Image (cartoon, rainbow, N blue to C red):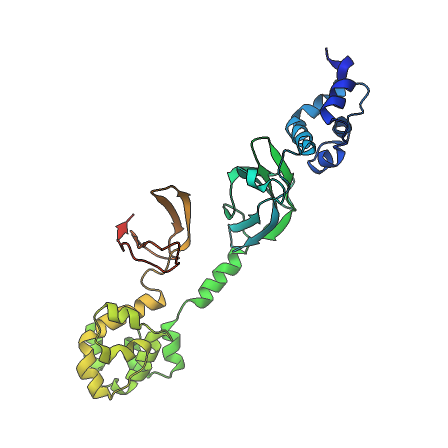
Length: 334
């Protein structure tokens, strides 16, 4: 309090004759502390000590008034809303946007007793905001930072994460049910043991003659409405048998059996891959760190999968023509 007698002159000089109350109010300074922002305070006492915790915001309001801070980031919006993450996008400030070094992101979960913001510093657009709670409402905004300080906050954006329960219902409903297909196709009961991707050879041999007339139903349900042609080609199935990979028998049963039975194991493997028994695609694949010579990737494993390792495929893209130029397609295990 030694300097209290000079408070009026000090804060008058700091404000430079400009009333910064609007900025201070927007940044959350209490009513009493907003008096400092106007620069017309006549005396100061111990009650103003609570304003010390807001000195960073107070300073940024002064710098904003001096015209050296960037304005608010623009066009803040959200995409890819999931159960526990969203992707945030925004554009640079209209004023002094070229001076921005990075951004600060502030977010909070709505409806809690503690409504304080969490802050993530030094981010850039687009940004993946992770570790959120499913089926919850959040509020978020960003601020631009340059060498002088923190600029104005962007407009607030509010979003609600997806429901984990709804997501599980969707995944359960989308899982392919081979048995249900065979039943709906009126496959005879005696042939039902063949309605499985894990049918054993003894059943196939013993029921082949009896169920030959049901082959169309078995192939159609095995394919599950999917075209597995790429997989079959990759596994060495000849062109004459590729129609089976999409659930269609073009030739007679005798011709089909003669030419394609030797490849039935490969075809069934493709059916398995396409309908979820083999590991499906990973989810939430994104880069967490990028340097001039490397990139760090992160992903979630396939749902209900026992995958033990992964293969990464990558290739170089021509940034000028945008035509893909293959530099290498390597298999890397992680």
